[in-house]
Image (cartoon, rainbow, N blue to C red; front, side, top):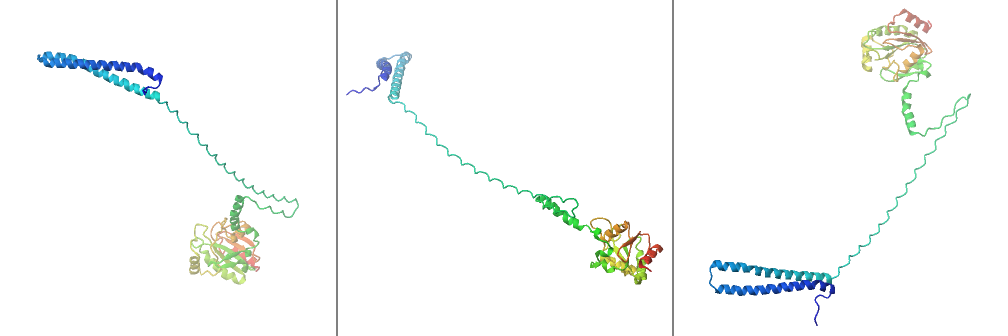
Length: 325
């Protein structure tokens, strides 16, 4: 059974001219090749000069080349016909459909934010007291932390201020001795007191001698001299308690009571002794060895500046008057 190498009619119609052309070229090439072979044998039999022989051979080489080209063209045509036939025989493969896209998973919804805790309601302020009321009702405690902290921070500072307004007499005040021991000026109630701010390196320091003599002379009558060392003026009392005691004893044989070093000037560290005396007399020391005379009831009587010496007649007259002699 004869099988048609090109089963499709359309391909057959396309390839027939090409195959016919290829067959003609092949026959022409074969014929030309046989003629060339015969002429070559005849040329070899004849004895001719080399120059004559060379010319025919060279001229006859062209048909051989033409035959080779014809064969190549026929082969190419055959190959193209086969390729076309194969392409026509095999239908193109339809493209594969793309796989469907995977559906994306829905994102998880964000967790709802927790509602902020409501602020506590402010404490209502206490109603103002009506006019004529003896004492107003205390205000409710503030809930503001900043205000509370500020109040707490100020409290110690207020407590450090001497409460001189509450002192009605010098003998209501507690002090410390020169050695740092607690002392109470109430022990001197019923005595006339001469309070002096002393210094060891001052131009008025020799008054220590006169003060000691005054104390010895009036002690039996009820006078007590009280010495309060101070470094407020000119830095003229730089020593510590022991140095002050040694100086007073060795130089002037001081036996009247001496107390701890104090500040006489106004300020947060002012001694309550001078806070009271300054308010009672309207005068504070402006230098070392200023003097205050205090009566038996603990009330201030008079103020004397530094230049008033223990031997001053006016001072002694005031002492006598306070003693009632």
